[in-house]
Image (cartoon, rainbow, N blue to C red; front, side):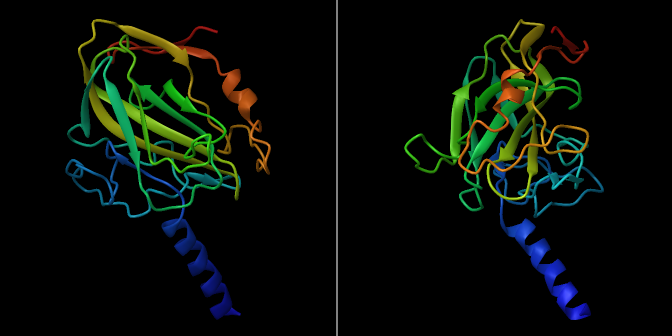
Length: 229
């Protein structure tokens, strides 16, 4: 019985380590598989399981962003209005898609404003082809900042009810704007937030939370963020 239990636990850990998805560029905090990653902050270790969810079946596994200590130097430097690419590992389990958002925080990952979404069929084209890179335009009116947090979040369509989040530290230049307004990042299947069931072919599951997400205004790091509705 003890050996069986050990096997089950080991298999579960292996599944978490080998499956799921991860952002690899810009390099998320402490990612072992990331591209052009900065040096680790002192006293921290590389994470070989960045592709694992931060919550599963209602259980919190890690805090939002996974790690709250940023990279000592930025993982990317962008200009407001430029085209950026979020690159994902070609290995992993896409769980039949789901809802993805890409967001920015100017207050050390306390509040996030959405800059891009791929809802219902994340990691897939409408044709069914697999997607590993998402390219979109960074809004021209996002504020500049030396310590901006770029986040990818995902609610998977199939499997355990999970929430994924990777965070990369970036700098943004080329903007005179002091604030930006957009939808607040949606959090689901994480303790303290709504749970949504498996989609089971119904890709409208959970969409109402995204459609009704309140608008939030984020400001440069010297100002606080606020809700406007």
